[in-house]
Picture 1 (cartoon, rainbow, N blue to C red):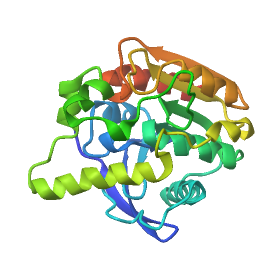
Picture 2 (picture 1 turned 135 degrees about the vertical axis):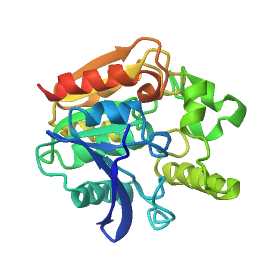
Picture 3 (picture 1 turned 90 degrees about the vertical axis):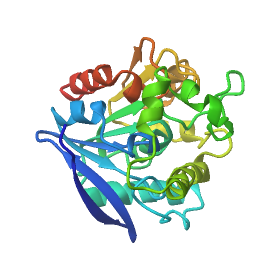
Length: 262
């Protein structure tokens, strides 16, 4: 597969990386760190049907330490909105957000309801229910992380592996910085209280969840659906873990294409 075009944008004064590939209707993706290290099968599958624009949030891979001034949930919501605007997102567009980044995609759709035309959330963080708690991603032991985050741990390990040409110490800093950036708005239990704001969201929504998600129980799809103020459809991918795009890339691409087509 060929590499995407990489460009830099000024997102409210923060220099952020964008990957872009494909033609057709635009799909903007706020992707989580594991899917920002290298271009994968799910990226390629989406780029075959869309102009795929993959946006790296401040502090996430490709962006250095440009997140250090973001301290509140409002800071992060505005940063996500500024990043999308700088990338070219226009009102009525289709927005996708996954895992740690999905929490901010949900907030963008809720805080700016006229901005998002269609919303796709893949196992997003943002809600916590003590009756059925999510797993603390910031407390995962490295020995267990791959098997908890993915139903295909070897594939997951390859996805986050140190690339050639990068020193081990530098790579350790990149991955630790991405975790620290996500922790700034998700610590400690991934609860951004987005459920309070989701009734404002008006965009038709697709919720994709892995049936074997060991981080956020699949039942949380129903919690998101019940909170969202618009029509929301749940698709559960059999056998997939939390990183559904790594575990079942073709299934995710097919569901996104079907939903985006209306």
